[in-house]
Each structure stands twice: as structure tokens, then as C-alpha cells.
Image (cartoon, rainbow, N blue to C red; front, top):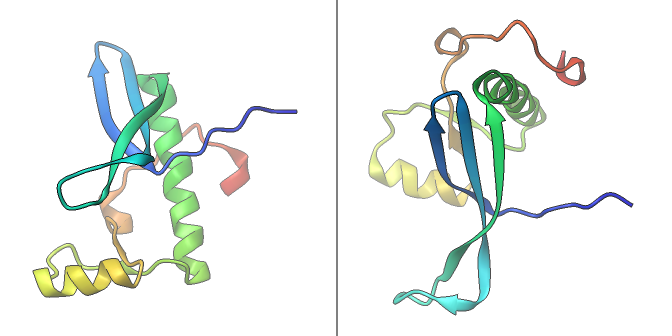
Length: 113
């Protein structure tokens, strides 16, 4: 059996020299903030070389493109108004860079080619 880690998101990315650290968080089942929203709790840290991180970003961008093509998320303009952003969050719409804004790394996973 393989260990699996669930994450609700990333809280912080820290670059120190040639090392990139990505902190994963999950929502606490017991701790709440002043607005009764579950607090984000540190769960695990991923540590990459800069090259490995850059390649990982490429794989994630291709996965996101697959989600967009499948209709799971929709691309919106980064200049959306605040009202549009509120409704976008409710509809699972995310803002992504256009293809000409993304530089492609030459060494990427064959899973998303």
C-alpha cells in the first residue's frame, strides 16, 4: 500500500537558494477562526530542487489544462471585477495565465503530453 496525503491547498512556497519548499495545509476539523471558518493547519512539506519544482509546475499546468478542456473549471480574465470574482468562486472558475504567458519546460512528464 502507498501512503497518500490529502491537502486542501498550499499555504506557502519558500525559495532558499536552489531549494523550494511547499507547505501543504488542510482545514482543521476542530479549530475555527473568528468567522467560524475552519483554520488552515500545516500538514506536510514538499521539498524540491528548483529544476524539479519547475518541472512539477509544468505537469500541474497540463493537468489544469485538462480540467479546463473537460469543463471542470473555466478560464476567466484576471481583470474580473470583484463581483465577478465572487460569483466565479461559487462556480469553481479560476483565473489562469494564457498560453502565451506560460513558459514551457523542456523536461516534463509524459503523462500529460
